[in-house]
Image 1: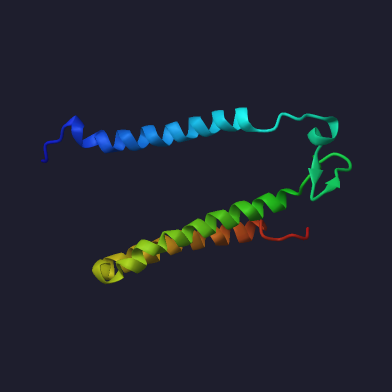
Image 2: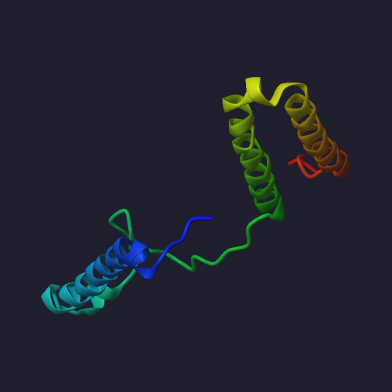
Length: 123
């Protein structure tokens, strides 16, 4: 076990203080240096240079959210293949079996979602 003292953490503390100081000084500087003009036109909502029309709160189909959540779920799965791809020679057969089991779990989840009809837009 390596002995460490508080001096070993000094560079980390300096970096944290500099980062925090930068954030605080930027917030204070922009508050005092920024423009202070306020008017009804400036405070109104605009999008792409066109004045907004109506209410922005409208119902969105739950199917859109289901598709987005499922995309994120299965997209994040791909990230976990990277460590295997980097170390596939060192992991040998045990690593291959672990990846196959990992893919099988997600395939079972995908089949469940498909059977429930979460991927169908028209119903």
